[in-house]
Length: 407
Figure: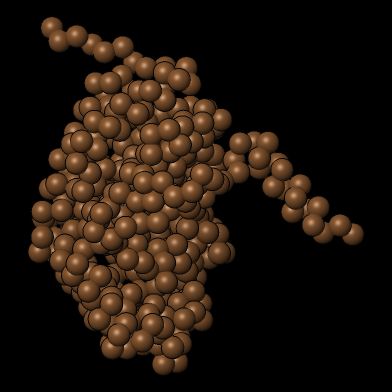
């Protein structure tokens, strides 16, 4: 039996479908983001990163890095165990207090990643609700899909952000318990869910709400609690899930909810119970970042300015920018091979790093470069990006949109 051939064949199939992922060897430079070093075939090369989920550059914020370093010096590097067995550090307790306060909830619970918080959070909640029907948006993240699947509960998928279809599903479900799982910002198209309208339906038909805010926390709302805070809907959401690894610039995930909900997940979720806790230094850095962004709007304002500038400059250059109302700027390619070629040319010729987004992350024919401007991208960075993208589009024979002259 040739076991190795099974794996080699699977990899060849990925490559033939243009879905094989190649990781760029990147060295981030604290204090110089978005500048970085790419360790490529020809050796180290300076580059500019345009696709990071460190949306606000908090990964190099001095309050955050100082909290991590000083905590590691005082307490060591590891947590020492699960939360139940010696790993419940004061730093992680403090972090959960900060997160509960951020979302105006009774309690919060921290996980090792945002993926795990969705995967084990959704599955545990649904299992604890008798005869639960999970009603899930069609474009929910894989971590949410896995949480739904692992719950073993019946599920119904409603068309993306389609309120009429959602209501149909809720009506058909009758009086049984229902959990509506959806996101605030969908990370590939950058569109926003109608939170109030979904909550209206949840209230009318007796459903519980679970909102993923991973691409919104830190960046939206007066204190960075996300789209629900921005829209005045935080008190209408039963469970909010977020990440510490994107705008907060560290790592980890969490949920915030009522005391009973959080305690139930703490007590029953295998993805929480049986894994080593976040190290105290990571928790302290995350707490420092959350505290900073609760009181500082400077990073959010600068980010929004640069997002608007990138959208304007790229559109003026005739590049096919997908219109969004958020910080995510998709430049559409529509072909897997061309998308990879565009990404490679940007990196090798122009020193600009934007990872290609292909199937299954997006549907076939919707391949794109996903650009995420930060407060630390300068106007000079933006102009260089526009020049590089225009050169790449021209060199690869991709379509540029004709510029419309002012009337």
